[in-house]
Length: 137
Picture 1 (cartoon, rainbow, N blue to C red):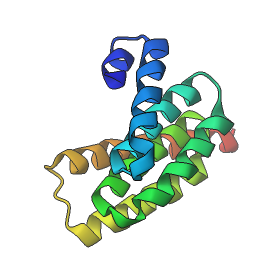
Picture 2: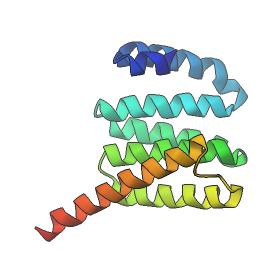
Picture 3: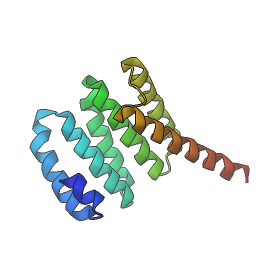
Picture 4: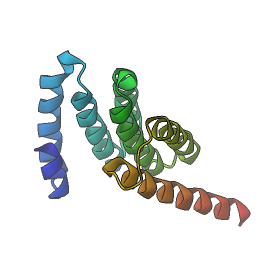
């Protein structure tokens, strides 16, 4: 429900439902809990709460070490958040980790995760190029 409200352009309602979902799934160290945390971190980053978003991402990542597919999706979200808060070098490292997981799991490009990976690579490439052009000026 939180994702729905986020897509509808109501981050306040999205936060309410994401927080409820986190509360209900947190006690189980569930990968879905981490997904909710990543979605909430994205909203926080968009609202300028970069440090809180990063804290939330760090908390969630520990749980996903045992779930490589979910970890890859999480890292893709983390990469996008890092780009949003202008941490390009961190985003590049995060994307490198996703690439390693995707290669190890043999994730096809035509899958949902594969398409997300292709899109995120393009975003990182654009951010890196933009950063290079700024330093060249």
